[in-house]
Amino acid sequence: MKNKRSNEQNQQDPVLQEAFNPFSSLIKHPLLKESFRVEWVRLGEVLDYEQPTKYIVNSTNYDNAHKTPVLTAGQTFILGYTNETQGVYLATPERPCIIFDDFTTSFHWVDFAFKVKSSAIKILTLKKPVQINFKFVFYAMQCIRFNPTQHERHWIKRCANFPIPLPPLPIQEKIIRVLDPLSALTGG
Image: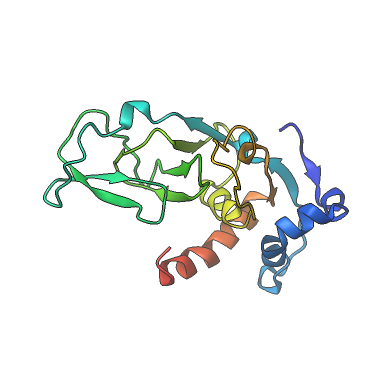
């Protein structure tokens, strides 16, 4: 992949060190009990995005008796349920996605079929072919410290350029085996 940075290069950059401090601590955690090289990649190098236009709900007359959830990337996450059957994004546990609010930069992991309320969402998926665990990228994104100050779209302009640490795939999977149960305990 292009624009890879070595761990040593990023240790010299105090802004990157500060931005990824919690994540760096996790990678150095003694439970991993092995030494490994971490490369840095930009989110846009490993994630594709899709505009949600064809998945936007037509009616906001939600009803819990309906089957298809209508999502927002904000704190509410599930706004309600619709009976619309056209334009449903078919995420599954085998083919998940991340919904990303382009204005607030909040995001959620989604592994079930859904519709969205707003065009402000980007649907992020893993680029193919890459040797990266998608869930690892999701957890790495949670460690990025960025608070938007202006009401503008952020994915293309800023967030796609954020670097994340990328250890070897077996290490990514070990980290996920630790974080998944912890995330489940906290309702994540």
